[in-house]
Length: 246
Image (cartoon, rainbow, N blue to C red):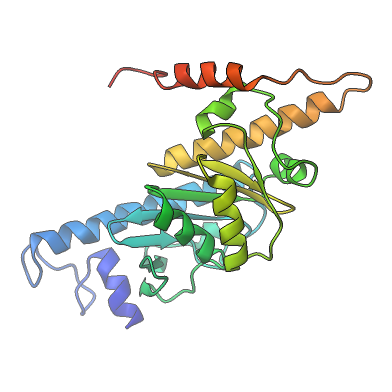
C-alpha cells in the first residue's frame, strides 16, 4: 500500500517504470499526480529554508501545503535535507493518511485546524528564536511596526498547551481569529497564506518584528514607541495595494 501511495506522486506504474500518457490513467489523474509532485517539491524547499534561515533547529517546526483535497505535510522526526521525492506524506482533511509511508508531523492537528477553518493553501510553523522569546513575555506582540497590518492586526499569543494536541490547535485558532499569523506561548509561530511563499514571508516578518521589539525594549532607560490601532489601520489599508499591479 505504501508503495502504491508513493507511485501516485512520482508518476510511476506498479512495475517502477514511468507510464506513457494515457496508458492506464486519464489526463485528470496525471494532472493530479503532477500537482502533488510539484507541491511536495515546494514543501521540501520551504522546509529546508526554515533551517537555512535559522527559524528552526533540527527537525523542529513543520510545513504543509494543500493540493486539492490532499494536505501534504513534513514527516515527523526526519531531517529536511534527507527528504526525497518518494518520501511525500499526505493526509485528507480528517487526518487519514492517503499518501506515503512515513508518519506525518506530530503537529498535524494544528495544520488541519487551519485548513478546516480558513481558505489557507499553506501553513508554516517554526520555533524562531525571537518570536518564541516574545511569546514568553506578553499576551500580544506590541505594535512595534506597521507590518503587523499584513498579518491582519496585532499579533496575539495563544496560551500554552502541549504540542501536537487538539487543545493547542483550539488555542491557536482563537489567536488566529481575523489574523494570518500568531505566536504560541513558550513554543513558536504559526502563519498561513494562499501560497507557501506567502506563508513563509509572513513567518519571516513576524520573527523580524519580534526581534525589533526585543531589541528596542532592551535599551536601558528608554521605551519603544508603539503604534496606535488607527496608525496600524492606515498602514494596513495602504498595504492592500502594495507591489506591482496585477
